[in-house]
Amino acid sequence: MAMSRSWSVPFLGAWAPVQMIYGKDIGRKHVQGYENGAAMPLLRNFPPNSPPKCFKLKEPVLEVMTNMPIYNANLLRINAKETRRYAGLRKAENFDEALIEEACAEALLLAEPRGIWQRYGYLEAGQLLAADPPLAIEGAAIGSHLAGCDQAVVLAVTVGEAIEQAVTRHFDEGNYAYAVLLDAAATAAVEQAADALEKAIRPQLAREGYAMRWRFSPGYGDWPLRQQPELLRVTRAAEIGIRLSDSLMLLPRKSITAILPLARAAACAGKQTPHGCAICPQRDCPSRRE
Image 1 (tube, rainbow, N blue to C red):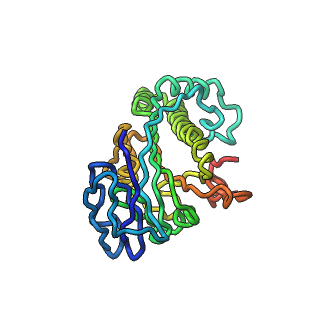
Image 2 (cartoon, rainbow, N blue to C red):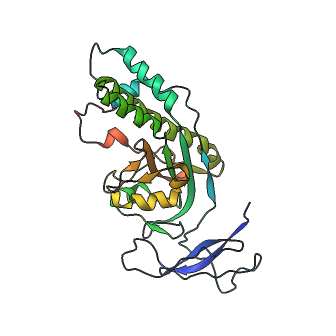
Image 3 (cartoon, one colour):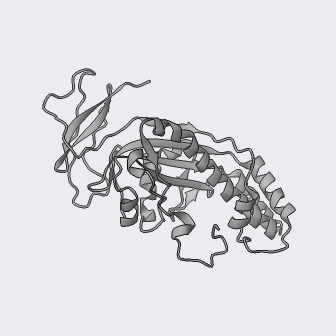
């Protein structure tokens, strides 16, 4: 397992610690997406126990952290109520519940849940995620969501391609209603897989005094989809088979990428930030969560 140390380098008018992994230079000359193209000093290799003497640490800081593992959720069941909602049947009456259960059962058999997550330092000034190279996150809404945080988790989750292949097959065979239900069950499955990943990492963060805010994905609010390639880079989503189409859609389709801000738990005490359906103005949406 690689050993690591964090040292400081001057960066964008401030000072920022950048983690050096023994024997490897992870510095980069440019910050992705930074408007003025400001340069970041390219670090050089140093002996493991000899940090550069000229560097000193001042606030604010940007810290590159060690990467975290792949996580494969174990789905025991798929939520039929959520499947009904994703299928737009929340208000439907006298619908065949057995068909929903059948779709959930097939989705459970076909799902291959895989997830991966990374933890990075975050610099609020410039909305910079301390990846390698750093990522300048665009958008006021995501900036507000990250306000007050000095770290963030990024994750990617998928349930694989077998489910969507089955959905296509059912459509081709004329089983349209069932195909819609199976597609909805697959959506419920990937959301549950993402929830399971969050649940798995939350205890460790809590022990360190951090509270994890709700996940925020490209396309929410004003966070543009054009940053989806960068989020795949910083999550290392390719390691679990996630890629992008030419139109920036995730493949497999039932996949999620997101960022979860980490704030000191004491600062979050008593704060409940509305999210998801609660902040959506489309009150008559058939998939709206009650």
